[in-house]
Image (cartoon, rainbow, N blue to C red; front, side, top):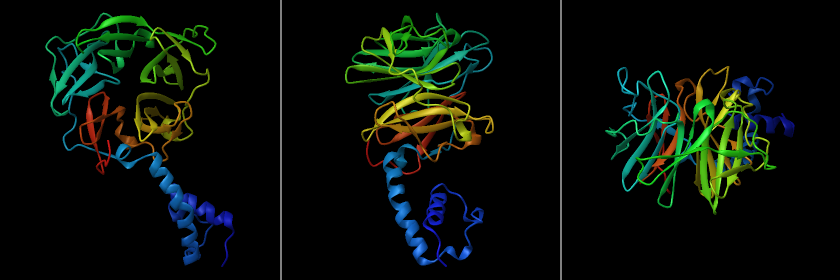
Length: 333
């Protein structure tokens, strides 16, 4: 029996998306003849190779560590009764440095802990390190001998701090964020700041109005930030795992491509999910076909990758810190 090319192509694409054959009721069971299978292989093989090149297994396929969580809030009676949203981990000279947000029925404050293995953590005795301004959902970028922290402040307005020792932080105030025209950004919430420095320019991916979409701005002086364009570079959906909200947690450059690790929320899923997208220019993003990269029902979010000297680990940090290892070890850094 002969089948039109369109039927064969539809069937093959369904296999690529993981649709069970039993659901393809319009294709008879005896369609599995040798020439049909050959056609599917010829169609799918280049696609799978391309997908593998764009989304290497070692940075998208993770399994949880045997003992999780590796870090939690201290609980009632402490300044960090709870921790929330994205914290940040840097590994330098064999030591893991973690900043996190703690609170006790009040303003969000900055905590700090260190570890030799990324699993067993020691809190700094001076915690909280900084509580003058509401500080949560932070990222820390080292540039030269200075550490820059970009964080959400009160009412989800992003502010910046700097430090020379990771412990003492100087406040620099709310970011001066502008439209592509140079006009001031309207007075809206803008948070979950994710900063990236490259070729003499700072890049900032941020969300507005509680994760409604993601925008990109740049700066050369850390003082004035201007949208690259006033349209978002990523919107929610169309799939259920991020159909309502999206926000970036980290940008990673790997094999000459950019990877965005972001969290999303879908009303039908009713959980925050951890997801990946890729780009070659920070403007045009392609979402990973197998998102979310952690089970949707696990409610693990605020994910970032940290290289441990051998491979990347995936940490999720809301509302406790969990670590995940690559299912297959990385062959390159």
